[in-house]
Structures are given as structure tokens and as C-alpha cells.
Length: 195
Image 1 (tube, one colour):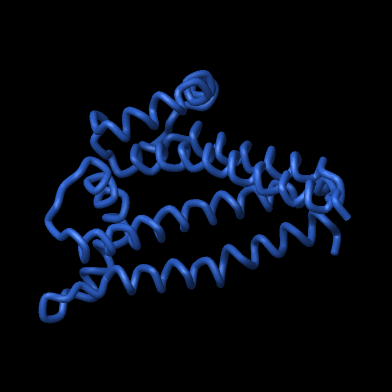
Image 2: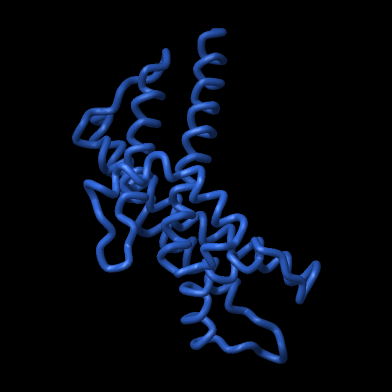
């Protein structure tokens, strides 16, 4: 029975450490995609943390069309490594190769939607608590969420000064998760574990 506790602790540690590292690469990808301020201290931190893996991979996989493919491929590889490491723990099994890539891709898409979701929530909370304040991270949050919130704001303009676009964007992101990402995860698990 104690083996289950160690396995659960192992899963927690693997998912936390790999998830945080994958998050840094996803944020780097998004900040480059939206052409965020490179001189922002948080941007500089992300570049320094991710450069050891991104720079060598860029020699093989260059950015095309303004998209940093090296960062995305590293996120997918980290997700693959996460599933493989969890599969090595007692009580778990290594996923079959045919489902492993689908699971890694689904988890990458899930991470992407979660970054948008939490960025919008944090931005909304900050606007309620301390409206009009500035800090380097708040500026980056505005740049990250702009591709999602601006189209929604064109459809749903502020009503009596109340901006409902964050709520609508959160609903849309959650629906994307339920209708597209979760079925992809289920399909990947079916392929990986032949359920």
C-alpha cells in the first residue's frame, strides 16, 4: 500500500517539475508570437532559463513565419518525457507509442489554453483590485491576452463601462477544452493504454 503513496508523490513531482519547465517554454513561445517587450525583466528571465535548450534546437529547427517552432517542440518533448517518467513508476505503465504522441500534443494544447485562461483571470483580478497600476508582468499579461480578448471585445463591447469580454473569453476557452482537447486526451489514452 505504501508503494501507492510513493507513486502518487512521484507523479506529483514529475508533473510539477516538468509542467513548470514546459510552462517557461510555452510562455517564451507566446511572448515571441505576440512580439512582447524583449527587454521586460520577466522576458529576460524566460530567455535565460530556456536558451540552453532552444538555441541548439534552433540550428536544426528554425523559426518559420514568426513562430518559434523550437520552443513548441521542446514543450512536446517535455510532455513525452513526463508520460515516460510516470510510466516508469510502480503501479503505472509506459504508454504505447501510438498514443504517446497524441497525449503529448493534447497536453501541449491544454497547457496553451490554460496559459490564456489563467492570464485572463489574473488580469481581471488585478483590474478589480488595483486598476490602472503597472508592473512589468501586467504589461506582458495584456500582450499575451490581446489575441484572445481583442476579437471578443469587437463582438461584445463594454456595457456601461463593464468589460464582459474576459468572461466570454473564459467561456470560449473552457468550451475549447471540453469539445476539442478533452476528446483528444481521451483518444490518446485509448491508444496509449488500449482501453
